[in-house]
Image (cartoon, rainbow, N blue to C red; front, top):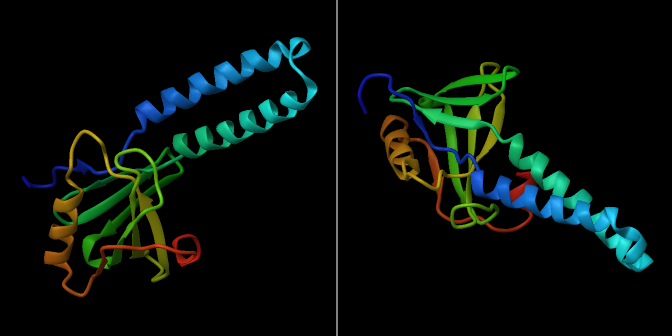
Length: 159
């Protein structure tokens, strides 16, 4: 890695966003034609529309994650711009929870500036694979890091 060149390791979810918008458009068209549909389908369409809307909100609000030779950068609009030294990363866990490239993610736990443990979920980018390079580079800088290759269960959401 040359100098302080930032490499993006998080996904933009372009295909997923497009797919969700198309599905929401189809459901919206079905809802506007509700007079020709049976009433029991109307509630199902509304429920599906709400679930797809929540998924779309979740995908659009994911932070962009970058790294360079010294730091991890978590950017989410103007409100959230966090710079974490790679030596402050405590663990990186491979997770089966996710969608997008392969349907997996990584959970990164780090110490913030107040020495509080925080975490962020990283959905790897589909078009490049710098995630393994990021893990190796972080492990080289921080030998005390805990790297977990598999994670499953309820601790995925509450750990």
